Image (cartoon, rainbow, N blue to C red; front, side, top):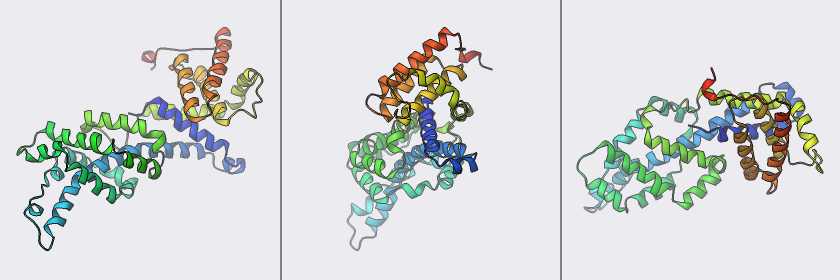
Length: 312
C-alpha cells in the first residue's frame, strides 16, 4: 500500500538525519539509522489511520449531538428527533471491530491527534448536505449505501475542507510530505477495507527494500563518491546541496545493487525527488550526473538488471 517513492523519501530523510548527527553519537548507536527509518515509516502510515479516525469520529458525533440537544432545558421537537443512524453505520463498525485497527490506534496513541472542535465543525457541515439527509431518510441499510455515505464524508467534507487540510499541515507531523500517499491509502481503503491489517501496512518486501537501500548507501558511501565526484564539473562536492548528494548516492546504489529496479525508473524517481526536496536547479543537476554515471557504468558492462518476475 506504500509506494517505492514514499520509501525513497523516508530513506532520504533518514540519511539526512544521520549525515547531520554528531559522529560520536552515531558511533555509539549503531542501530540509530534503523530506528529512525522505522519511526519515519510508522509515522507516515499513522496519518492514514488518523484520517480514518477523523472520518469515524465525525460520523459518531451524531450521538453526541442528539444527546446534547435532547438535554436542553426546553428541547424542541427537532431537538428530540436528531437521527443517530450514521453513528451505527455498519461500514464504520466493520472497521472498529478489526482488532488490528484498535491495536494500532492504541499503540500509537492516535486519538491524541483528533481535535474535537474540528469534529463538531465537520459534523455540522455534513448534516446540511442533501446526501446526508437522503441517507438518514432511508429506512434500510445496505453495504453499498453504508460505505457510500462514509466515503462521501471523507471525500466531500474532510478532504475538500481547506481549513482542515491547513490544520493537518500544521498539526500532523509529516502531512505535507505524506498527504499524497495518505490519499492513495484512503482510496484503497474504500475499495477493500475488510482485508487490511493495520499493524502491517508495509509489505515485507518493501520494508526490506527500505532498509537495504539505507544500509547500502551508508556502506558504499566512499565507493559512490568515487563515481560521483568526477562528474561534478565546475562543482565543488562540498558546496553541492547535501540532499542532492544523498539522492545521487541512492541513485548510484540502485544502479549497481538493486537488479530488479530499471535504471530509467531510478533516474526519473530521483529527478522528481530532487525537484520536490532540494533547489530549483536540482532536478536538472541530478539528471545530468546520474545519466553520465550510468553511461560509464553501461560502457564498462557493470549494470546487471533482471526481470522482477524472475527474482526468487
